[in-house]
Image (cartoon, rainbow, N blue to C red; front, side, top):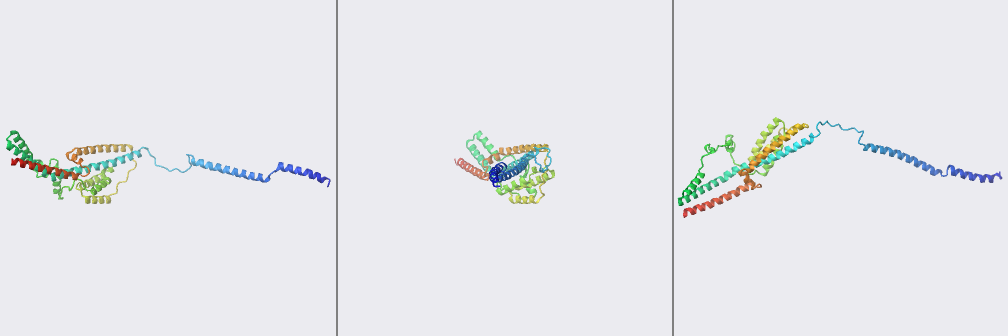
Length: 332
């Protein structure tokens, strides 16, 4: 036993050491490595799953329920309808501008005749008296002819409206005569341009009730009849009447619902009609601007009523000059 012990002792350690180094040199590290490998494998699998989910999320082909949209036969129709709506609103704004200018031209003409007509008549009478005074002094046939011409301008031939006592003219019955027959008050406009309150109410009403905003024939006729009253109230500068009309419109039938997408042929036809209507309005605007009154209004676009006062002052100055000239001729 003792003899074998040292040998056994000498042989066992190397054997034990050799086995330890070859079989399991570091069992703790190996377990940790195995755990890490398992963890790495789990992470790899999880990462693969996550990547797969991400790829699925980024993929243009998704297995998600898609929203069903109504079939659209004409893809460009939506843009075309927007163009029609924009053209309609632009035309309405242009028509508002033309109508407000027409009212100002008409009011300026009536006030110009009412307030300055007597002054023009006085100037014509003074010119005739001056020419007659000169002809009496010189006796020249040419001066006599000029005096006769001046006198003829003061006493013109009767016109249609004078023959019918101012009730009608060559274009038809005058507004004052129509008002009298309809038992309405006869009153000229108080100013060329209606008040800002009336102008705002008028624009708002036209933008809401314009006939071009509907394609239903019955609704269009209703709107046309309504706008006749709106235009009349604005021409009279009656802000109270415009406010009442605004309340009436709000309490009236609701606007017709927008129809579904129209066919492109209808929309193109609508655009063509709007373009033609714009040309008609442009012609009306040109005629108003080229008229004598329109040209005068261009001189004071911000305040035409002030222009009327300035013209009156100029005419009164001319009257004073001619009266002084006539007095000198008679004294000499």
